[in-house]
Length: 222
Ligand code: DX5
Ligand code: ZN
Image 1 (tube, rainbow, N blue to C red):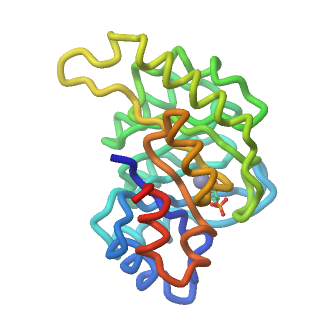
Image 2 (image 1 turned 45 degrees about the vertical axis):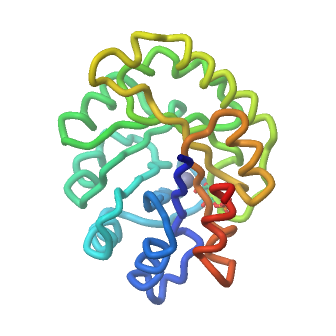
């Protein structure tokens, strides 16, 4: 079953609680929270305070996407604020292994993410340590950008690698889920799922629609 993670970056911040409750009732599986610092990406968005407020608004897992420099400095704060998943960029983490370990020590599931310009092979060595791998299908920074089809090849490569690595699903260990983020709409969702994506992040496709339930169902292909 395909999961959908609405990105609250496109929500109406005048009433974030109502927006979160609306997407929850509409069938969202996770709440995607885009954290930007104005350094790693040219935009400033959300900090731990807002993540804590989201925590009080929903029981859904909070999928916190850190687009910040020095993620290690802030991982404990986002964990305390109530993140269920913390995803760090391969481009900004000084040591993926250490940062993943730090996320685990804070009792949060770790994820890793690659920008469009970063080869997906760069994160192959941590596939046995993460719960999720995120492929960016836009350059991070803003909602509402156009999907970059090159991301599909990366999703396929990841899916192949995960399927052909039996050690990733030994015992109770679950292989990482593949998430895709940026420019997801009804058409690109279909292609992403065909390529092997398990979780679709969508901001504008959901929050600019009149009927969130219909938008989420459509993305799930129902
Ligand atoms: C981009 C963010 C995305 C973005 C998605 O930097 O990571 O999560 O908000 O928005 P849409 O779905 O509108 O591309
Ligand atoms: Zn994101």
